[in-house]
Length: 545
Image (cartoon, rainbow, N blue to C red; front, side, top):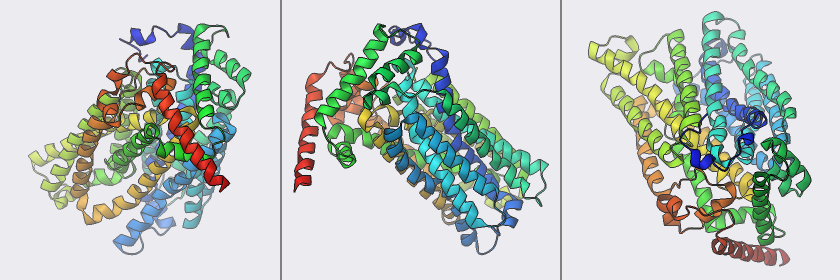
């Protein structure tokens, strides 16, 4: 199960560690990714349904006004998610990962109950989607943080990317829900747009119930000084006795890292943590990886294709309502299968860096083909369906290219953005770093969702795809220089990698830190601690003044 040809890295992992408790925890927190996928897949179909357009007067006004109204509805969850990602930082550290899951499920559930009970009131739709967005935004921090903290290092990439794959489980469920509602429910009834939205209520309610069946992570319990409970939970999770060397070593690594951090940052406030994140070079490099992966990934076109899939398939000649929605269903299946293929077999086998390279390269050539096709074939011919034989074959190739770009995204940016954000930070900065990066993620997605309808009007569809091609090319250059390989490294050993000079971390980091453990590179640890102590002294002196 994703561990073939990896005997060396699995050699120090007892077979008892890969047990049903671990996989159950991974299932509960991994399925959280479906929240984002559900919304991205459902909202585009919802605003395109005649029943929704008539009920909320979506077609009134100029083209620009219609595009703005549509983008307001589609982007409201992203706007709420910005605040939700910041809220997750406070709750994750304050009440723990499991209680944060319960809080976000309550927000997610409440928001969509408000949405489905709306009768012609667009303001209620916007308010409900914003509240739901608070919960959905929290999932991107809570899910990966929990998963990376419970996963054995040998299969951390595979288990953490269950979350990333679940995004496309949600997308697939959403696309099939929209398609089923469009062909089975009349456009004159509100149930045509309401029925698909109830998928949110089902997922949120189920996860709220299941959250009471999992235990808190040993790392969070250790951070809070609850050492006995941390040991008990770790033994349950690993299915090993308290005196087993694997358990003792894992707990020792966690405690040693926390002890170093506490000694170096005694009395630090949340503002002090933020200054640690942005002013200490090793932490700043980690933060840069998260921010740039979100910026380049979001504007590579994949998010826009997911949300506005029906419109893009219409631009490629799939003009019938049922026809274009069915094409989106196939896209959902492709993204789901490719996401889990990458999670189970590629991200830990090929490594983070090579998977990202391959994924962006596939995405680049696929999107470039679509851009060239739309620039060469007249839009009027595609809309009318009057195409030559060569144009028909090229159109089929363009649709296939959309599917290939989805596979590339799942293999590249989608797998990387959650994993690197969760695994590179020290424990005390993990919730803060993840929250800030995911806040930036939703700021980007909000801007992307708001901008795409206008970009399609001003740049034409082919211009938008050429823009995405350029972003993919920039992404390849960034990966080559800056992204390090973290496969097989323990969470506590990341400091050795990020303590290297900045220009060596990406290209040579893995080779230079090969064999370095979590407490073997004392000199580099001490350098980081010294800088942190100096930073804290400055903060304390400022406070006294």
